[in-house]
Amino acid sequence: MIELSHVKKTYRDRTVLEIDTLTVPQGETLALVGPNGCGKTTLLRILAGRLKSTEGSVKAAAPVLYLPQKPYAFRGTVLHNILLGTHKKRGEALRLLEETDLLHLKDKKAASLSGGELQRMALCRLLVRPCSLLLLDEPTSACDAAGTELLLGVLRRYREATGCTMVLSTHTPAVALNTANRLIILNGGTIEADGGPQTILRAPESDWAKQFIAGWRI
Ligand SMILES: Nc1ncnc2c1ncn2[C@@H]1O[C@H](COP(=O)(O)OP(=O)(O)O)[C@@H](O)[C@H]1O
Ligand SMILES: [Mg+2]
Image 1: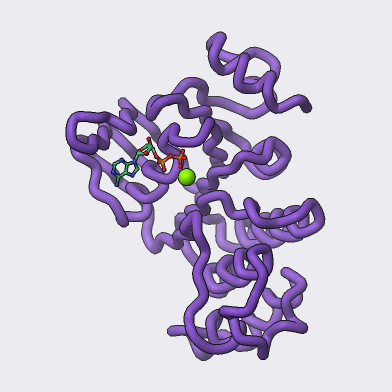
Image 2: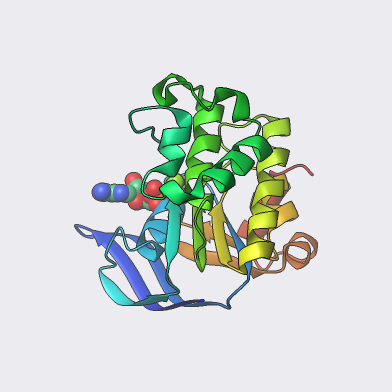
């Protein structure tokens, strides 16, 4: 569950996010899309409690798990990275590594992984724990088509098992359309369109949204 009311984020005198109201019921999967700089990361960081809004009130379900836009590796092996703080979850960690096609890398130094592998490892590190709110900032940006499919399957299963609310940002139309039951298009920090993906595709709420979706070429 998420409830935002009159949320504004300002840097000096520049407003980069302004959302009057946003309510996301528990269990919904919401995709955030929009051009670079439209405020996706800012909104996710506010929801994650990593960034304070300048104005307004933010309520979000806990516990929350957050995947930053730039995934990172801690010292040690891939398996060690996933078990940090949750050593009892070894079986679960191995299952996730298998699901994300990383099992053969479990004893490799995490710092030596490729971009796509690192992104999948960072996701495993989150998903070894249950949560009520899962926030993912461009979770498939470093994945090829096969890797993207793999991750979407893993996310779908996690969501079904936990009943969590999921908010993800993406530049990949297929990711937004295949995972989310709701789509929000951000433009310059404000909500340009908000609704079911198919509804937005069929009848965009504004000319700007129409132009943006036309760029998806689906
Ligand atoms: N620490 C900061 N100081 C000043 N401006 C920032 C800061 N962080 C983000 N911004 C600005 O806020 C806007 C939204 O950024 P961001 O949320 O990262 O967009 P997106 O994730 O959609 O690409 C951008 O114009 C960015 O330059
Ligand atoms: Mg971003």
